[in-house]
Length: 267
Length: 338
Image (cartoon, rainbow over all chains, first blue to last red):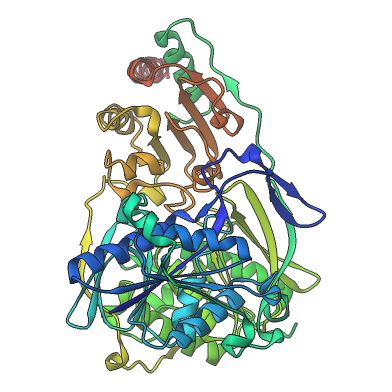
């Protein structure tokens, strides 16, 4: 079995937002210099799902794949240190300023080039743009079934069985391989890289592909192929008029708050 | 832009269009006043009664596979139905609720239709005839406004951002049958596990009491439940208590959870990070109860109490009961005088 996990490198989403600046003129979010770049947490959990499938199956090849600048190699290394077998770095100046469509297009082409993929796993959305479009996009471009928001992924007899989170519980969904599955936080925490795998990671193979390696032209990738036009980027205004309810004791605070609720006809 | 109309994918709950579906029909009616064309609804399970209901809520035409089994979301089946309807109606935009169903459907539909998708939108508008979509990103801390250079756009929209179209029984519309081939399905739903939540559906509750990391453990939700009973509200949570197993994930409110727009939102032990506020920021009144006076939630709340919820909430319940009792007494006295 061959599992491809698509990951994205993002500025640490756990960092306080004061570490980010929004340049409304350039329409860019600028992380503070030195802010840690990490694998987007849902993608890390997608890799965790792949590792669990491999453990249950006894064997599977796991490829960790990312699209980004050369510095995104660190995301591949992290995946290899978590236990993936090999890596694919998709990097090309032509990929810059793309959107969810061009990203899915490049990833789908790379999955196609690998040729023998049984399952593509990725996070439900990336921690920067929070769109959740690319996973489904890969499935549609490769004409594969897609199952989103997985909290459990199991493979047996050439089919995947996924518990899919829905608004008031979960659905159990089965689909034949090959398939695309996006993973949600309900799957549980991803493992930390082990010392042993970190030592081995340096010797695991990583290939680098550019647009021409994938048979894609300039007009199909990056800014040339993008369907999204970013019109405006801004920080929403805070309401900022919070009135602190007075009271020397919890009893007074409770009574004063109840009075406010009554006056606002909220009781 | 040609006059091509707007399409809404309508979801059902207990056999009725959900509140966000009705809101999207309201938004669609607003949009067609400017861009022209009809408002179409896709509802794969709609029978004649439901189709008439969707028309009363603002649709001019209802596309349905008339398959009762498709009342619940099925990714392959719904995407196929929505794509067939979108090809037939050729709308400028397809609007879908930002639910776990809509967030699955919209990107698939967009790629299938050579279109593009904006997910989790809080605003959909027209600017010189161009559709623009505003949505939270970067964990709810930033908003982006985007447009698309494709013929068709697909958007998921959060609940509570638009008003539903006032129901009008006199409206007339028609229904179109979607040919649907059940054997073409690849991913199959084997089982649907549902949590029996409280009496009030979280998305529709007028009052929501939500707990966060500051509750310090699952027992905190028992305290919140007492207040919820008193105010006939529903219980919610930020992501941390869900991930820690203090409460079910179905209670999660925020960027990756539910969007709620109650009249009253009481956030207890919640710091107020952007990803949580993305799910509750549109509540009419927000009250924060937190021990940390520096918590970001106080920048978003209307009223705040700095204190230990274990003490504040019981005293709040006492005070509410006392106020209600004295109100009742005053009313009684007024009635006697009359």
